[in-house]
Length: 141
Image 1 (cartoon, rainbow, N blue to C red):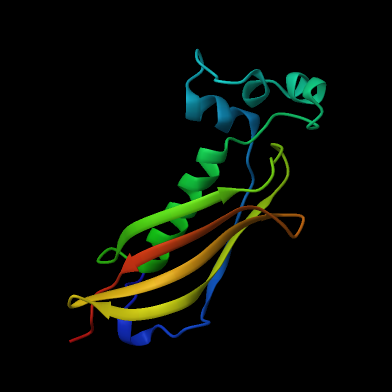
Image 2 (image 1 turned 60 degrees about the vertical axis):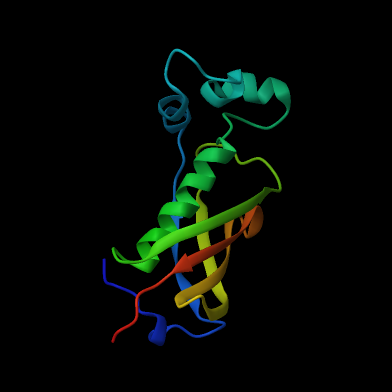
């Protein structure tokens, strides 16, 4: 992972997309094997009975992936300051998700280098989670 610097970031820069392949086991591991909050997170058949087509991918797992995605982009000296997401639709385990984003603003706030990003999880090209993230980046100087 390389360090991202404030001076090197421009509005409309695209983040390099990352693909994730969620599995039913990931949902079980995320919540704990003995405590799934919804049977469809642990059981594809329960998800099918609910009409979603299989085991659900937890929204907070997708949110965690987006946080890691942005943190990796920012580098070890960058700091994720704020994350807001909206869950748009469910995703089913076994279907790939693409994490992507772009820079929508950069500014200095009280001497801090703040970069705002729009991020999204995409399944089949359709957004399932949309988010806005504020990241603090170091200066090269």
